[in-house]
Image 1 (cartoon, rainbow, N blue to C red):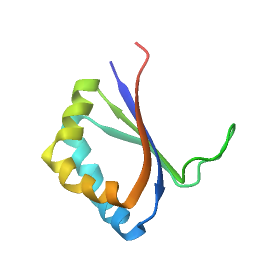
Image 2: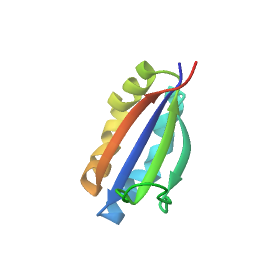
Image 3: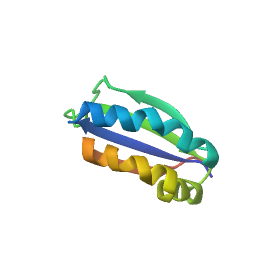
Image 4: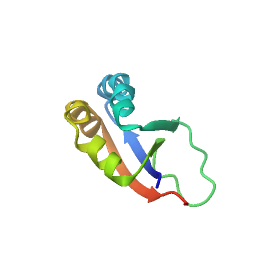
Length: 96
């Protein structure tokens, strides 16, 4: 079943984040991952703003997401994202 990863981040090192972002998309393709949305100007509908950027990814299933997340290709660039941002990532199950 499709899973969606939702990241809500604040960027505090733009140069390092851009280096990560430039290498991000090719890491998704071998795992069937898709970038569905990436918005640096999300509009808050309810509650208080907690992030500067929201990213929405889709993967065929949780096992595939976990394999991508732990892959050497992603791990080698994720160091830049972790150093350049703060925030959270949640994984949600799609509807059957």
